[in-house]
Image (cartoon, rainbow, N blue to C red):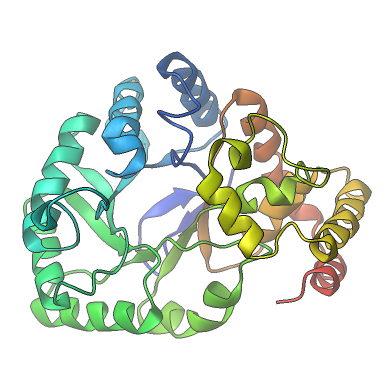
Amino acid sequence: MEYRNVGRWGLMLSELGLGSWLTVGNQIRPVDLKKIVHHAFDAGITFFDTAEAYTGGVAESMMGQVLKDFNRMDYVISTKIFWWGERQRNQQGLTKKHLVEGMKESLNRLQLDYVDIVYCHRPDPETPLEETIAGIEYILDSGMALYWGTSEWPVERIKEAARIAGEIGILPPIVEQPHYNMLVREKVEKEFLPLYEEVGTGLTTFSPLASGVLTGKYNDGIPPGSRLDRFSWLRNHIEEDGLLNPDMLKKLESLNQVAEELDATMAQLAIAWILKNEHVTSVILGVSNIEQLEENLIAAEIKQKLTPEIMNEIEKILPA
């Protein structure tokens, strides 16, 4: 397992992280989560990611219970504040009030004194950025979090946040958590280019397998019990983006041939491909069992096989 700096900052993360979106509290029972987290840790994964909104806080509670098994200095944990849905305005968004109160609630569920990274889970157009930064300043100064970042923010808002943070003398957002995979590339590979130098931003990317599309398991339809079968809103999103149309399925067949030539699965190839991006600090895995975790872990080895020639071959199949 390789460990990478978060952008130009000193904090280091395992190149593969373990997430909890749509899995912990939905597909994974507490006893199974314990086995998965321990297996991940034994394999070198020391970065774990969750959020206050995941399963209504259940994911944080379950993750916190398991992480009690480890020395606090041996892992990095991140959570995200924003929430959305049926809540009063003061109980969601990026107001100073919700950032501080939401952070305290998250720590209670995680049974921790602090998290390593807190993300602003989405941009909040209804709250002045100065107020959001003031909330982050309070969280950092009080020791509830050591670093902060953003998730799915536009580049100009991240740059402005970094400017304001510099003016008041706190760390800028050191990391962004974007949606990134072979099928979703524009933001990471083009829009964010100024951030890597100007702010020193690192990336912890999510949905490396495009909700399972890049495993090939949907090539012949949607299997019962699969993620797209369980979550209709996600299936609708995938279908609207054309990720299951005949043209895309043909490209996926070509991609599978590349994977077979490398003695890899499509999932391993897709994750390894992300790891080749020098701006990516950690790829967040979403697994529901140990078998999936073991398969995904091999991606760290497959990346060594991705020569410039292989990368060019992939680019021809799935151009940016």
